[in-house]
Amino acid sequence: MLFAHLLGGCGGGGGTIAPPPPSPPPPAAPPPNLLLGADPHVAIFDGRYWIYRTSTVAEGSDKLYVYVADSVSSNIDDWARQGPILSLADIAWADDDGAPVHHLWAPAIYEESGTYYLFFSVGPQNPTPSRIGVATADNPAGPFVDSGAPLLTGGA
Image (cartoon, rainbow, N blue to C red; front, side):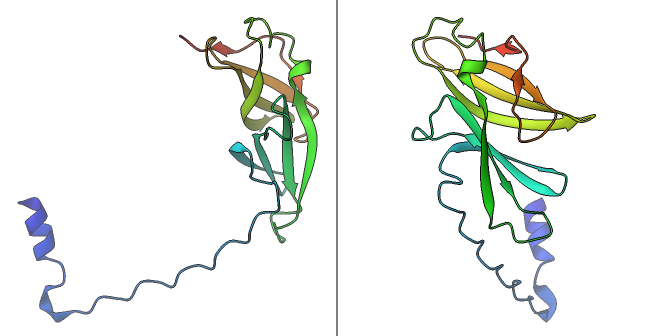
């Protein structure tokens, strides 16, 4: 009934419907290999875009890299890869679950009082649960230093 009432007030009385706004131009294609990974997290620090993402198999799923654009106010088509910013080899607790292979994925970052906190997942997810860790740096490009223990371990 409410739906019929709402529709009854639309379009009656001979008014015209405004045309839709023009479509925005398509975004520029990302540089090769920029978004081939997964789980992208975008942040802006000091007027620059930073993309933290899961690495591809070719890059090595045991490392995380960051891509940084020139500037927020300029063309963001020019990206530079930096890193690795964190490697499994630098996470002492990564092998504690006894799984034969591990990967890093799903990075996310924030800054507080000049310290950058990089959150990440360590897996596999099966047969052992994934774990979430945190590493810190004084620069968004790292290198990041692991906290020494997982923050959270997933349930089975």
